[in-house]
Image 1: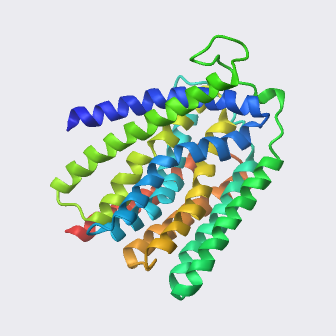
Image 2 (image 1 turned 45 degrees about the vertical axis):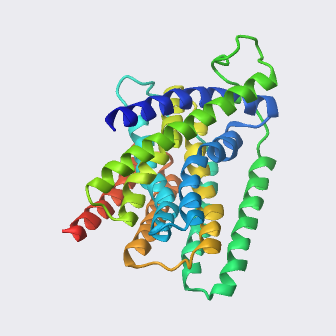
Amino acid sequence: MLFIILSGMILIVLSADYFTNGIEWLGKALGLNASAVGTLMAALGTALPETLVPVIALVSGAGGAAAVGLGAILGAPFMLATLGFLVLGVSLAWPGWPRRPPTARPDAITRDLSFFLAVFGAALLGSWLPAPVKVYWAGGMVVAYLLFARTVLRSGRQSPADAPTTPLHLSRQMPPGLWVVVGQVVMALAGLVVGAHYFVTAVEAWARESGWSGFLLSVILTPVATELPEVLNSVIWIRRGAHTLAFGNVTGAMAFQASLVPALGMWLTPWRFNPLEGAVGVLALAASLFVYVSVRRRGLSPRDLVGAGAFYFVFVGVALAGLR
């Protein structure tokens, strides 16, 4: 089992490097700026692994599927809003890395977080609505994401500063051919999905042997594993000084996880939360609001980003204490 976990991690790390390199060149080919590339292209691509978890759980209808599905749906944005920002903050201040002021656009970050706060708040509110209304409520959330994506694309004009800083891994031609770029992105994305699958499978098997509940497993462990692509991509981009791509990758994934995936949950589950499930959603909103207010007041501060991680550890402590 340890071998499978390590193999999955290695595959994810290698695939993340190829994916970030390829997605930069794909954005260049499509004429999109770094904000649009990170918020839409990178975020949608790396959101696939964690999206598959609730889909498979809910469609299979196996015992405990609703608990696992809800945990994965709520746990993914919760993890990104807490540990995701914590990792970004640590990466910005990591000793030996380029100590330059963060260059990510605060307005792009607050735009993504504003959408997250509004739509994920609507998703939580939807748990109190009558079942017939939830169908249309979920449809409205899908439409909201499509409008958000259109807004991002309309503001996504490329500038010289958005040019890739390293050659494409699979080609030394400058610029590389479009199909070579697409091929590298697809190959890397497949590696991310396969690596995340084996990593998650091994971690879940280990956790079940330890007696974890389905919901806690899907909230605490599964999102940590399946969100590794976003987190590692952002770390790589911060190391390269591409802060806009790094932050857009996380906040864009949050926007996706706040709208399309909860809409799926409304269509496939009763979408009713117990107190622990509700706490996950509320803490995700609280952590996002904390970062949103911090960015508006002080700009990007590594200390504030690290502070968002406190919300995750508060929940884990309360949840583990409840198991005793």
